[in-house]
Length: 148
Image 1 (tube, rainbow, N blue to C red):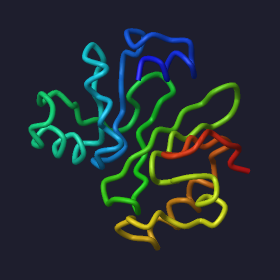
Image 2 (cartoon, rainbow, N blue to C red):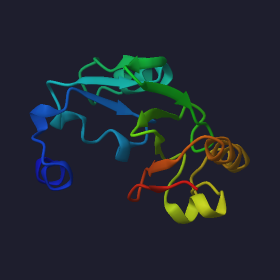
Image 3 (spheres, rainbow, N blue to C red):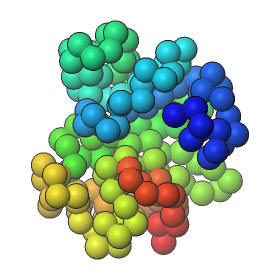
Image 4 (cartoon, rainbow, N blue to C red):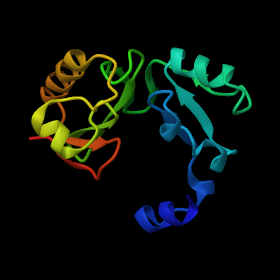
């Protein structure tokens, strides 16, 4: 984790002050232990599931709405019912850190959820909703890309 963070951003693990978990699938929270000094954040239902799992100390905070200056938690159901993403403004653009609401660029282009989406029709509706305002997407399993 430290090497990848350094490679992508030049930052050490200690520079990360908050981590947001989009949903309770293991591949989206497995790295929490690398950030013991950071706030661990998730939508309330996701925080409750992670805190009850016994995998981590029960310190994931349930959050909604604006969590930091210019950072908003938004519901993005479809992949899971309680999936949430982050919406932020950067350099005049709306960036959505989408998690698995948008798996990859190809899934975005096709407006389809991943094979394990709990509600594929809702996943497609969520992507259409995001298309109405997102300029840049950070998908769950791909590099960031322009949404338009």
